[in-house]
Image (tube, rainbow, N blue to C red; front, side, top):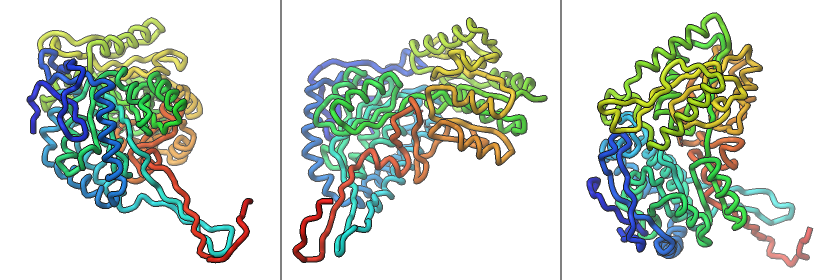
Length: 498
Ligand code: UN1
């Protein structure tokens, strides 16, 4: 496996191909700004057209390959990923800064995703229905759509591409992946391994670049499906373009996730849940817990104090160090943006219980480190109560009762992941019913979504447009229905027009 090469090329249909732009961007380790991980091509329209031409030819073969045969390739890719797990996890940690144990978890997610969608290759069910006429059958099947443009974010640079690539390929589509310019290597490795697993040439390409290049993918007339994980702002633009071009479009956008803690919650479970929900992956998950909505009770004040003390003890550093619990932020400018939220929250009356500063000195000077931050006295109308930070900043909002907790939890334009901690099954289920989010957790934090069968991943409101990845519902994005009427009466009949 080639991981030390500094100069990467586009992977066009399985062939390393120099970009006609002859231009590169550099990717550094966020934990060590001196470590150059690689130079990646700034792909352009010509590269994209070449990838599309290969994809078009490959689609004719791949769509006619039986789905169980397509599945065999995903099974092999799962095996290869398993063999390379540690090595891939190290690449991931270097790209994103996330602790190695989390990176191992993410690679496992890729394996699980391949295994799940490989299994789907034996299903991809349609429907049969009852005709209104004698001797007639109606069968609906799912068929692939064509070339999929997959645009992914830097925070899960292996798992999220696999969530898109696996259902797309198993359904018989071909893919062009643009990983984030802030974490390009993991996506590149992912496609390399699919080819090692026997994916026919042309079925997948990896091109690199920023949002501008992503826009070329979205606008390409031959690309029939666009799936993007990114911000609401970008999602709106992509949806608009896809709307005008009548393309299928799947959007996974931001989150402003909350844990609701009721007065009967188990404080130990809650402590662990809030800590990892808020500060795992340095708060850089679209599912990260960014609000603790806590019912005022005899123990709530002491709990918040305990939580702040626990946050202060988290081990922050380079993710390759096994003791590290919280890594750096992805870029310097992202750290500035995170800090901006803290500053504005303080100006609005927030009370910083811990953190709130850049970490400096020693190894911290090499990376974009920020202290895990907890800010109390946040009112539901403040910016920190409603806007996504995407960093290790937790807003604590106190509420009087269950009704107020629900109202505050739903009071955001996002709707990805909401959680409730309580021992009361009635309240837990009422919350699950009334939360305005695509994912609900009971006595577990807002993070840690799986990808199999029923575990559809996606959000309500501005978090997306109703599409799902992860579960079997992901196939809705990557297939189109065809209804086949079979008349086996063998009789002349007046054509039915009603
Ligand atoms: C994301 O942040 O884009 O549920 C996805 C989780 C992860 C996926 C997050 N499995 O936290």
